[in-house]
Length: 325
Image (cartoon, rainbow, N blue to C red; front, side):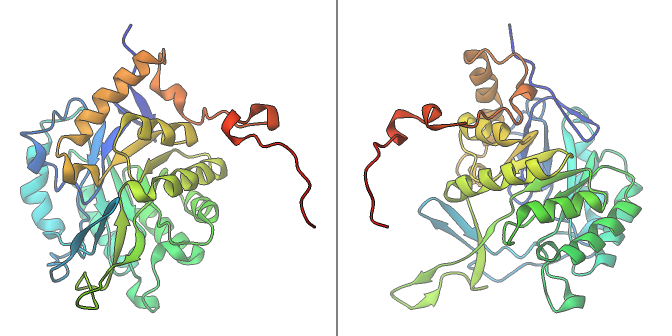
């Protein structure tokens, strides 16, 4: 019997827990001819701001040993053009959730974008990018300070007519605290993690490889850290968690689900394989069938934690020996 791949996410019924991540799937329409939208749970658009943004100067994306570093600078066409040009064609895929990523330099920017989006049809939810610098408070990222994050989420939630997903930054001391703060402020779900701050230097020229100097690291290199953060966040809150960070295989996705994620997002993998979201969705279904998982939703939080030495894998067991004190 085929496994049931549906999951419920803050009131949304998704045909699969696989979602394409923001910034890696364009506005969605770019992938129409290569990805079957009926096979994936949804996708998150590029970040949308009140006005168009050109982004950072090139070079703004480089490959690393296990992923990439980007400093695109949130280039986008602005909420007006998004509503007029990009959203209408997406309405022919009602079974694929269109989630709009929202960002700004001030809380008022976020509220402005949400207010405009509220009037449009065909949007399932909003994803709040909390990693942006707050220009009114010295450039500190909204997601790195609990009080600032609370203010952002509570204002955005107060204006939103749709489920509000808050995308958390990993560049914090306690991801559990930030997750609890977002939930307390009214978030309907969380997505984590965003990219890790990173720097790469060309040893020949002795100059940073990115024009922006600092960029965001993503890809398989961050997956174990991202899984740990999802596990910590999922234990700290009662709202759904969406996991992302270096997912390339169905087993990667299963790790995040076992750690407590309800759904997962595929990001960097789409750069090397534009059909990665559909491929992983199909392969996850096959994985569930092979492992006799009747409902993919049953994997959420199902990690079996060791309770004593007898539960450790053989390779991790060590014989006792005296040590110097």
